[in-house]
Length: 110
Image (cartoon, rainbow, N blue to C red):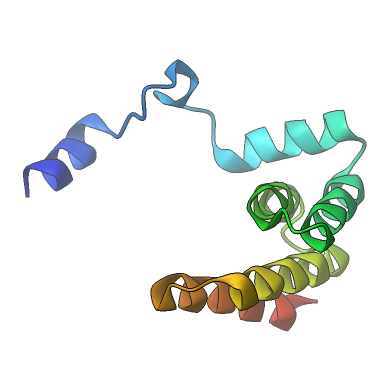
């Protein structure tokens, strides 16, 4: 209860000063996508990382791409593929469900 009250009124801080009162995720994602050369570049790099077995980093990059371009079907195709690949390697049932949900959401948008 105390943690939830703290989060409601004080926010949540992980020790990274940039995370205390951060910019909106979509704003950060858009800026990073621009720096990378576009959302297609982020999504492609995420695919390459996922195919190489680095699903964790791939998920970060494809999430940034999806947040920067929420209506791009190609980005959602990559997101669905990457989260499905991560789901298949996961042992936790809860994590599998979260990854399946993310993959399904994007499959419906691609």
